[in-house]
Length: 294
Image (cartoon, rainbow, N blue to C red):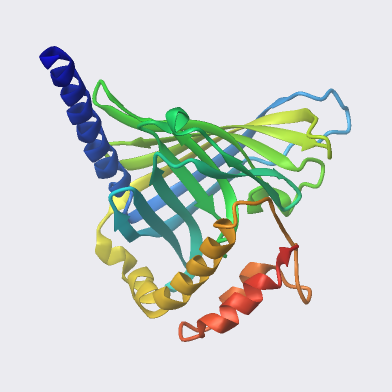
């Protein structure tokens, strides 16, 4: 009996130690970074002589990652892109939830399917939930952070809508299956991707068109280089919290979700980006509601 108690105690202490290390490396993604975005199509699966692969994409940016929420089982990181003369673009957001069981899995065409996992399936794992610039869903997946041989990384494969770099030039596929690797490095962190470009029909049958490699490098620089983004967030964080809170009420319904592509000929992000930081919650709620398909 004593040996059993000691074994359980040892396991619990180990889990808590790992969780602390997990939180440490997730928070390490916050701060000011010079970012290099690299994407190239690698293998064409469908043998079609008329097929044209996407051009190789190489881009650069300066990005501030703000720690918006800091709780024992939830960390929220907001990315803010600095462009031109200190102009700010509210970029993507990543939430990290410990032992989360509720998922909105991307299906296709602005539709996400709700799925609930057994707690045993996510024991000790962290879910990364990634959101669009307007805080609508994008993709999410669960896995354990690995700390071994001096390396710290997290890896998961999940379906996602096309990123902006693709949906503006490609109409021949509708799902991007992403294998995401986030690794903390001595210079900052990296986001590595091995992606499959998929055509999915209404029955969920998939046909792969091609594959793609992505590597985003986040090189840490002095926080003073991102002052403009810090100022923007201070002035607009209340409005964006209202937006997040509204989405949370929608997600808490735990049912499939389908969104309109546009309302009044504008996508959701354009409606929200036009608002001031002082915009009342009732107005942002109304805008988001107009995009929800019942």
